[in-house]
Image (cartoon, rainbow, N blue to C red; front, side):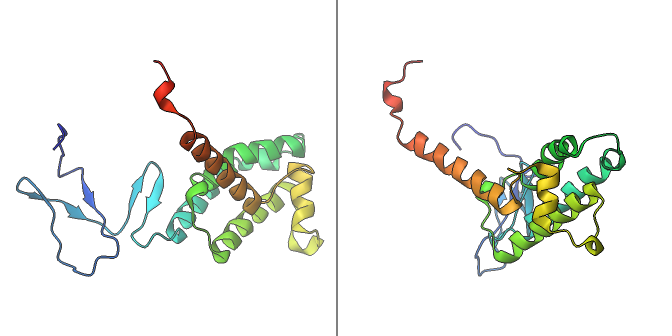
Length: 177
């Protein structure tokens, strides 16, 4: 088909909103394996379109990145601003990979906020008994312009929207290569 060759062993079938449970797709004489979800470019694709599983996977990956930098968070000779920049680059970027396309529910946002606040409190060394607000901890680590997770997700969405708008309003017929 269109000069492409498909390998049945590398193809997967993910059904979305399909009532019949016995659908079988064949390439040549081989049957393509049906799956409940799969990972594509690092993001978990699920049949219902919800991002619950994707967020859980992102939190697991970000937790691993955070744990791998444990030696840095414990050092007292490094300024909080440096730790905050490392946190944003190494942990938040893992946590929010692909977030511009997520359909977030309130529960999803809460899970992301809880993880983010827990990490920031760990960096500062503040526990709940110290009675310091999450925004105060965030300002201490990320500075006065440090944005919360939901604000960062909204900025990512706006950036994607602006990119789509520019692409739609560009006349590619006049471009010479």
